[in-house]
Image (cartoon, rainbow, N blue to C red; front, side, top):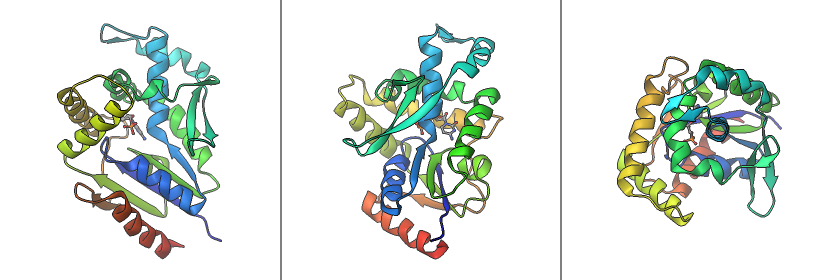
Length: 227
Ligand code: C5P
C-alpha cells in the first residue's frame, strides 16, 4: 500500500508529539521527534561546557558536531523510541527546563540544523513516517503529502507542559514554564535559518479546546484522503 510522509509542525507544547506518536502507531509508521534531536545537541553542549553562565561557545560546539551521534531505539515497555547520545540513553535528561531554556539558541545555529536535517531526511526517505518539529513541512520534507500546523493558546500549552513536568517529579513554577514557552516560540519564529512558520499548504489545527482523540480522528480523515 502507498506510504506517505506526514509533517506536524507547530509551537512548543502543543501536544504535537502525543498525536504524532499515536498516529504513527496506528499507521505502522515510524515516528520521529525532531525536537528530541535539538535537545540532544543542547544536552551535549551543556555537559561539555559549551554553555556556561549564559554564554554559548558556538565555534567550539560546531567543531564537535562530528562527534555527536544521535540515535533512537524503540522501548517495548514504554511503547516509544527513546533518544540516545553516543550510545547513552538520555531520554529523561533532555526533558528538563534547563535544556528547554537553552535549546532555541542551539537550534539557531545553521551548522547544527544542517546536520540534523540531513539525518531527518534519511530517516524519512522511504516514507511511512510521521515527523514532528518546527521546519518539517517547510525545510525537511517540503513535498510531504500531509502537513499539519498545530497551535493553542500559550496558557493552554504552559498548563500542559507544567503538569507533565510535575508528574515527572520536577520542582518548578507555572510562571517559569509559561515564560519558557513564550520565549522559545519567539526565538523559533524569528530566527534567520528555518524559522517556525506555517507552510502555505499546511492545515492548521488550534487544539486549545480539542481532545487528543478529536485531533486524531480529524487527522485520520485527512490521511485517508491521501492514501
Ligand atoms: O519539539 P520540542 O519542543 O521538544 O523542540 C525543542 C526546540 O528544538 C524547539 O523550541 C526549537 O528551538 C527546536 N526545534 C527546531 N526545529 C525542529 C524541532 C525543534 O528548531 N524541527
